[in-house]
Length: 181
Image 1: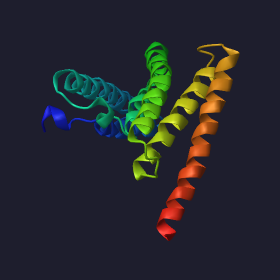
Image 2 (image 1 turned 90 degrees about the vertical axis):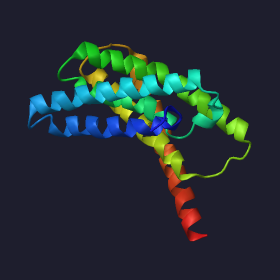
Image 3 (image 1 turned 45 degrees about the vertical axis):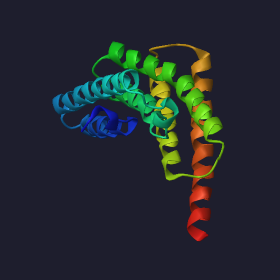
């Protein structure tokens, strides 16, 4: 695979492995920690490859941005949730990374919609919902564990969760409409 072929979609491997970590947490703790660590390694590797690709090749940045861009933010929130039983500090670092990436991903998604000039349904839009729900779940977990005590966090998390639910309903109606046409 060449450097040009590395996209945000490759983060899905990290998502799958990190989800295994969460699933194994109550059964085999050591294996859960190993899977979470592999998820972190994949996150940094794919992110470095994407950044190198953006900086060294003459690719259109808007062309790189798609629904899978949200996976970049969602994977950091998922890693934060998966690693939280093992290291609160690492969990907070990845949560802050997700919090930092959230407005950036929203902004680049809006720029993509403006540059395309045609707003229409595409199945890749579904990848926007899961990262928002994971970020909300992770934020609720951080609030519950009292790692950060800020009243506004609950409001932010609830707003993102409400956004994810609204988009779910919207995309579901688009899907039903496109199937029945």
